[in-house]
Amino acid sequence: QVQLVESGGGLVQPGGSLRLSCAASGSIFVLNTMGWYRQAPGKERELVARITPGGSTAYADSVKGRFSISRDNAKKTVYLQMNNLKSEDTAVYYCKDDFRGIWGQGTQVTVSS
View 1 (cartoon, rainbow, N blue to C red):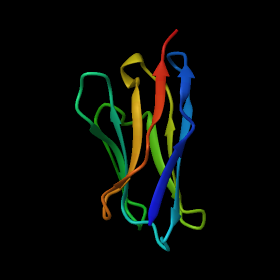
View 2 (cartoon, rainbow, N blue to C red):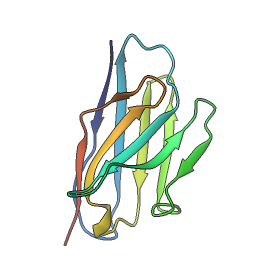
View 3 (cartoon, helix red, strand yellow):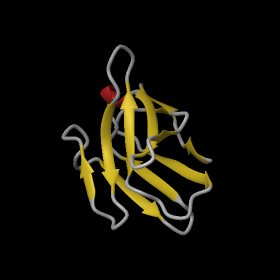
């Protein structure tokens, strides 16, 4: 059984930064393609960033140049560095093992002054 646990969310002022972490545990030896998604109140869940086992990345247009996804295969952890945060980034952020279809529980990010 594979589990994904996110951490690092919180309240931050506009223009601030946060780093989210997603740690995988259980019967997992290699991280697959991993994605960070978010869901704002009243909106559908959307893909924010994705990283392949080889390190190739892709981003939603709304976060390009501000967010950066990375991975530490030895720690089985994926990160999302979020800079220059805006109020519209407020959402619950989830990580997902895109190959296994497994979701984490989510972590709340609130951008507000």
